[in-house]
View 1 (cartoon, rainbow, N blue to C red):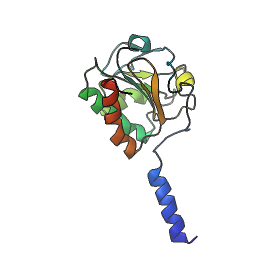
View 2 (tube, helix red, strand yellow):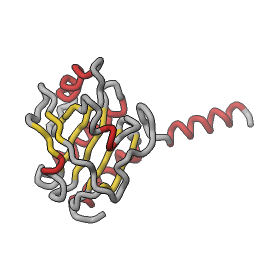
View 3 (cartoon, one colour):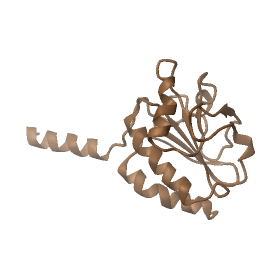
View 4 (cartoon, helix red, strand yellow):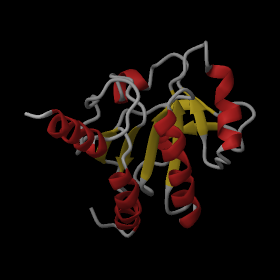
Length: 180
């Protein structure tokens, strides 16, 4: 192969790969399964207050769990897309929750990032990794777990790509409409 051909192939691979920070792979929460219940408190200084309990939302409406970290640049692209989707549908039709996996060295940056991105949905911190260990054991970010109205996982995906950014609104619309 010539050097220009190698460069073209590398550029093509990079362009088609999803943006991701951290390890890739699937978690223990496989599509078709019911997710493990959890409760996590809102990060102080964010728009949403209280404790998010997954059990309170399961079986009522679609749920999008977005695992992120403050040091993850693709997360800064994905979270505003999710905010736009959350504002497109009422809270009675769609639940979006951002689950920060930051360690103690960056946990203080969660609230400033949520404010900068103007997130109005729950932003919670999995400080002890109890939720991540069950739903995102690779600790990949960004990492989405999408749950349908029946309480079953329909999608889990690591990374965030322009293609996903285009497809996600239609996927969420279908889930809100009860299509799977």
